[in-house]
Image: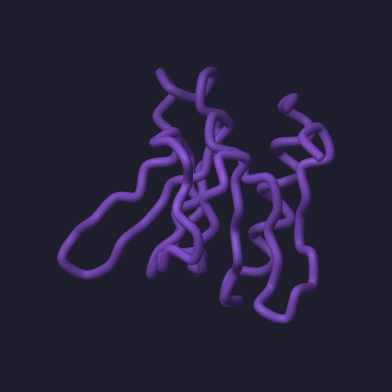
Length: 107
């Protein structure tokens, strides 16, 4: 994904901040969660990870992935996933099935 497409992806995601999301990746992982934060990656990581990240919290696994390419971070309060240029989902929908974003380069 190029930087322009990634910036567009971040913009779209910032518009659905309070919605419950269903997120799926090419490794089969499918989760439900909510956007917790959209922020900037440290400057020394921005080239590799993209300028911004999206933190998804209250992650509930619907279908486990077939590898460990997407890390789910576990802590006392909730599980979370960080989305950046290296962990771009294949598809993001609302709970009712409305497609919010789809990675056209994968599908």
